[in-house]
Length: 590
Image (cartoon, rainbow, N blue to C red; front, side, top):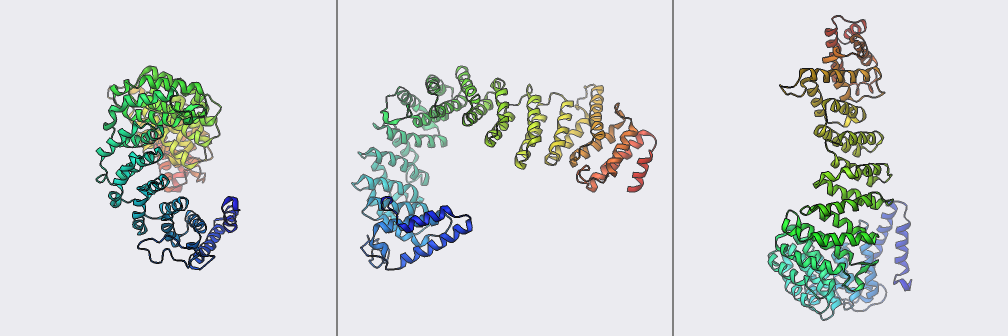
């Protein structure tokens, strides 16, 4: 245990939590641990040494408590309190020890104290105010580890009303000789601006950020890129003129001018590359002039990443693809992005295929013409067993749909819907099929067939307005006064024959919307059928009504039965006489 710096008691706690079989057992373990920690806090315990007193905290620094006497035990106490909090229990009894330990002379103990306070103290907690003086002292400390610890604490513990108490010290640390302090200082300053933009103004932060981007140390430059990206997402205008600088930095990275310590699996500073590419994406969006300056470096960056062919470079390729589709379009780059996507989609790796589907979605969203080149590859992804990839592929197919491929894609979506059992996925997919059918239907007959098939598969999930639209289409045709009446008559006849075939071989279960739509169509236009005489249609509807099967009658609701009976009576009027079965049904319901 000594090598791990854990007491046996702590080790047994972690072991017990890991081996617990249920939440209830875990709760019992933590409840016992809370009692143990409270006793340690209250008892005189092991042996005593003096702790650092905290101004304004009565009794801090006293010697009557084991936690005041042994810093190692105090550190472990805080870690155990953190476990209590992480597992959903109240550890507020130990917060005061976190405040005390933050004032320790030991950097390890100090950072443990700051860690507990950062994770557990709510923004309005009174203990935050006790830490201000200590953070101010640590910010101006000659020990860079104390300065770093204080900067990390400031980002988590400072509230908007306290920003002005530390902003001056944080700005001063931007000039610190140690790059570790400078890179934390710029991130901390950005956080202070987010909390209180009066204490740290936007203009002031932009000025400091532009200066830090040119820092002699690549680590500071990398940290500054994070700040620039976050600020550019809010307001890109102050950074529009940074395109040449960003391109220059990206070019130096691609040419391996940075120290080798920034390489990852032989890829030069991949995280910096991705960060710069994302910033260029934000700046170049809807800006032709800025975009034109990026084309060359984006092409070079994409090509070099493609050549590497490992995970880190694939991430760069993906970011390049997203940026190429976001900035002002350039056909050469779009073609290169399409080729990269093709490689991802054809990969055996599910992760790369997911990247391919996601990347293609970003291309299709702005440049639909590229969808056709990859349609078959995307369809193949539907055969994958990975649930996340399937959902992303279905969403991409929806985005890829156009008047040319609507029939093919709708057929694939319907096929997938038949085999799906996930209620949320079925509902989402049903809505998407309805939308693409209404938007891109090649003709009215196809629309009627498709929506009817959708009624059969997931009718309970279809918006009732869809059925109303279908019936209006059958009744009114195109609605164009100049349209041929014969075309409308053909459409009605096709709809009738579609439902007659369904009536002759009814499935074991018919959703309510399907039964009611079928009843209306046959009731209005059943006489147009050429595949079954009208009296046979009447008998079929009577058998359906008399079957007593709620599943075949869309749940058997009274309103549905009324519609079926109404359809029978309409067809009887069209036929000119009342068949015996119809007479019996009418007598039973009247």
